[in-house]
Image (cartoon, rainbow, N blue to C red; front, side, top):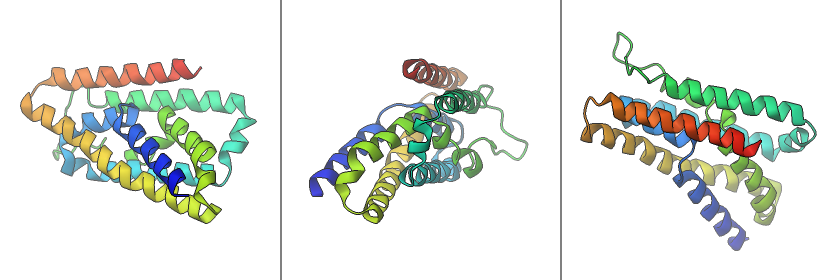
Length: 195
């Protein structure tokens, strides 16, 4: 069981540390609003992955395996949402009260359920790692808590990195727009690569 858990942790760290749609959106949020203002968004992103892990842990992946048309629809909805979320910062205009309404818990909670990379992570976790962790309740506890802890660390780091880049190049809309374009390219690549 220890070996299976170590393998799971290495997998989670690798997946959370590498660029993907959610991490790029978090980086944009950090550049736009800073880490403190995006904390609700970060918590929402973590909770969204928790919900996704619960769904797959209780067998939703088995249902989807028999629904290829639904999987295709979900992929395009996912890609569309991630692109829309990234593009919300294109002009970097804040609301009148000084708060960007895009980087809130409400928008964060649906990032991972609509993130193609997150789906791959969760499917691989439950199909390749979970069975070696013991009983179902142990699997559920270890998978969910491990993802949540590692996500909090790395999602905050990605957000903080965006904040640092913006401080290094203050008032630079080109930096933000460059991150947005990279995010859009990563989402489209993930969509086409998986097709």
